[in-house]
Length: 92
Image (cartoon, rainbow, N blue to C red; front, side):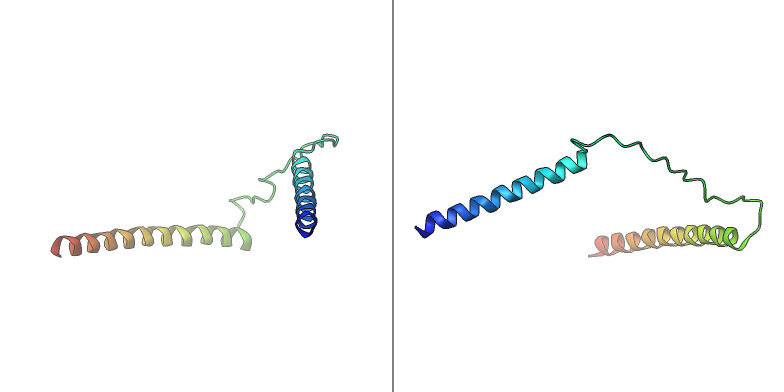
């Protein structure tokens, strides 16, 4: 008796989860809904004139140079670490 009751409860929960999953998939695929227009986003809208000297422009320029220098430093550090690893591998 209890087995049938538990099986019924599990089946009901499985059916609920199945319906919820398909509802989510239908929502993602916009099934049964009118098509929406694609929103156009202008990624260049917040760009600034490079000739104009502003605090924001100076910050972006410094940020780019700072991270470029860091990347170069990390690259050379990795080369040195690989050389040390190779030397240790050869000597041992």
